[in-house]
Length: 122
Image 1: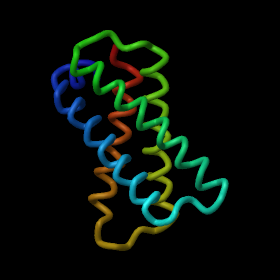
Image 2 (image 1 turned 135 degrees about the vertical axis):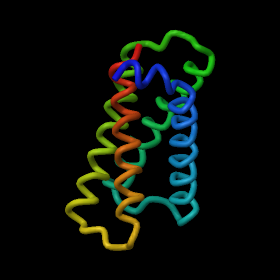
Image 3 (image 1 turned 90 degrees about the vertical axis):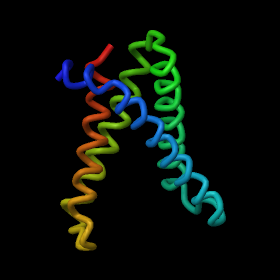
Image 4 (image 1 turned 60 degrees about the vertical axis):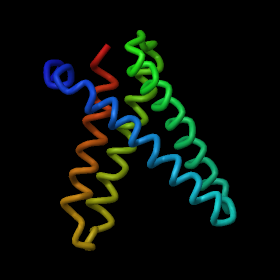
């Protein structure tokens, strides 16, 4: 796996940037809709905001080829992995039938591989 990730370094850097952009757009859209209604929604969006910040810092460090702190890589990897597993459970339990099942499955795989990369690559 390390050779796979090492050979596709810039793909994963660009992936992090895209993930940050997607999360920022999502957070901005929720804010534009009139704010968060419940405590559970605030908790989830706070976790996503912190995860987005961690992924953004990791992307900046990766572009600078700087050493990434282990604790930051672990937080980013766990965040991405849990997000991927959450989307995977949504895929299976919500019975997605929109015709986009393959796209969602590829997106889940992409997120899981990105989380795994954060956990195993120095």
